[in-house]
Image (tube, rainbow, N blue to C red; front, top):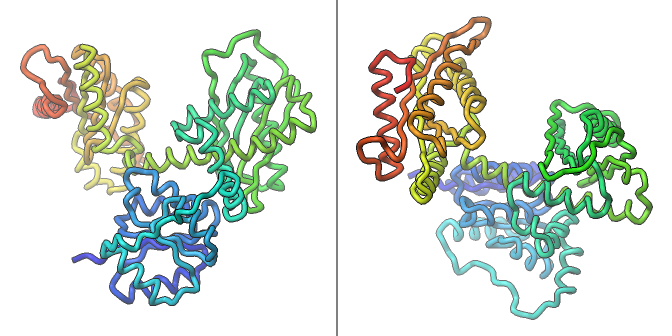
Length: 480
């Protein structure tokens, strides 16, 4: 019988070694993390039975990590123990408010910690601590949050009560546009941006609030990078990514000149973690009062959007294939079931493409598994580039892929399959200094079918799989 696995997160190597020694000594397997973000990622990647979180950790503290774990479907039933040096009633109250199941102090007898871990793993539900029944006013609660939790969690808690964006934790794209629209009520900017700093990586998201010349957007981006470089004392980034959102609703005459620029850095634990920037004529007329409001908005916007990014990243861990970044098998089948239901409801066409790399075993045998992985990634990229944005593509398993094509009849499905086949056949795959030719066989099935019976998503998969088999039997590198 495999040992039960405990995830322990603490930024103190000494505490980690102590807990690991105690737990391993009684036959438990231990996974360690140095901060809350790493703990969340390992909670999804590892099959753990219990999570022990320190409160004060870099990047993301234990309270914040617990809130995310207890919100996600995949981990919300995972028991969480908060381990901290704080032992005031308010600490316990807010530790449990974040969703923690148990709360214990670091100075407790090691045997007490071990007994708690054993009881949790044995499913001793009676140990769950219950919040006090005494009444607390809203002012009292906010005072406790301000006193006991770090500023970031406090602001997230407030925003979760007063803002739809923070409360609903929608997709990042929607969150970003919504948050920047709120900022636009403070200053009517032309281009707004939010930057996120993670160690040596920089992600920049820009929103075009009004029509603007490309040169104006580039100048805003350049000014933003200058502001960040200044705040970091010139320390360069290993990777910089920028993305522009330009909603179709933006109307009016195109602005040619920037006019003004203002930036508001966001710091976490004394380090630059983000920056809000606005560009446009109004940005040149920001007074002291609005500067103070924008500085506060920068912190709040960063909190809301950083949490949205984290949720999206965590969700992707559960639905994406790690090698190709396509949807994994499970999520692909969930999407197919949803599209099949929609097609039946609205009597719309739906096609499914099953694609298999020809002679893939020979690639691994002759060139090695790293070459095989490179081919899989390249095929995945070609699929993304060839298909429409409304299509969904996933790694079905091994060297086999599946593409879901909404609003697509059988003939159009065949045409799409042929585009994919041709794109792969014409692509120059590289293995070291050598060029490798790769082909694919493609099977297509559609709902409703021209003949036969397809009465379920599984039946659609079987028909596409049969077509793929016929394509391979007919000589490969073809679409049937």
